[in-house]
Amino acid sequence: MKVKFMPRRPEAIIKQARERIERIRETLNAIDCLCSGTLLERIKVCGKPGCRCAQDPDARHGPYYDWGPIKGGKLAHRTVSPELAFVLRRAIANYRQAKKLMQAWEDETERLIDAEAPRRL
Ligand SMILES: [Zn+2]
Image (cartoon, rainbow, N blue to C red):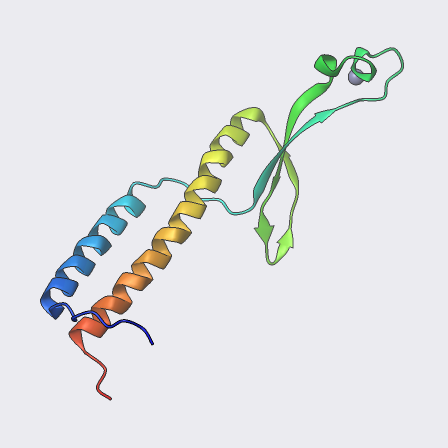
């Protein structure tokens, strides 16, 4: 059996949930770009005869960046420039953060609904 704590006053729950939602919205508002998918960094051995990359790990080519966004349920690979990779890395991190914030927003909304209209049963 779960330990029951004294229920907090609905006004306090409502106030706290509203404040949390406000902070979530501010954080989301500060996000500029969003990208799903993953970014892979690769170093290549070219296979050309006489190229130092075959012997010397420091002479290998790259890094190359492969971005794998998910489009219509399929992974669409695309090689991108280091400059774009830099932007994408941040956009991907933003996407993950935004998803967490959306979940928190949903949780807080649920608390708000429960506090404003308690289930009767
Ligand atoms: Zn090479």
